[in-house]
Image (cartoon, rainbow, N blue to C red; front, side, top):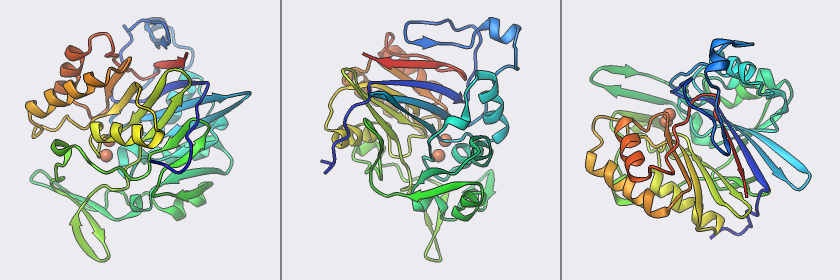
Length: 318
Ligand SMILES: [Fe+2]
Ligand SMILES: [Fe+2]
């Protein structure tokens, strides 16, 4: 249990600034607004771009105050800045940036984001996000995939870098997760071909810099953003519930990292069943979740499953 109280937020407005998917044929539903066909066929500022990356903007209200958080920065500044303009997202109002981990599809646009924010803001990141990382696979050897991410470069771009290992409150009812232990056995999958430089030695990369974002919305429960699933979505949810001291999971969104060909269908089906047992009102497998996981989750939870698309805005308020 945590030694601090997470508290509650009065409401959360969540914008999908960047994701892998965009679709103009989706329509609005209560609490969920789409960028639809009218905005695509008669755009005032252009149409939203999808790319292999993820970025959320959270506007959290608490009393008469509000806090705006940019969570992750997609893979390119191009899509992030373009989508902000198209969607009318004022990046200059961002109060704090959080980078979930040191993979390029989550930090790639961060310098463009800081430029658009235009003033010094705190940027929360785990120190291991800066470790030298590489990927070795039969089809590709990619050395130093996170070369662009450095504390010095971030500071030069205007960030006040805040390195965290533990959970950290960002506003009433909102926190970063801190390090997440993978407690669900089937999620303890050693990453293959991912290496990091640790005290001069190349070792299997534990991706222990991975952070989620947890929002406790008054009278609804937890909204958990798990952008790349590196701790396992079930383990991340267990961590969030324990951290917040709140059982009720209202919504889960993000990349559940079940898209690799090597992930078994059995694991996907078990994950979907476990997620269903938590009874979320909304669940959105995005980014790296993969089609098989999207299909399994949609079948298990046809009412709760909501396909996200770039520009989707969700309102969480009791
Ligand atoms: Fe990742
Ligand atoms: Fe990712």
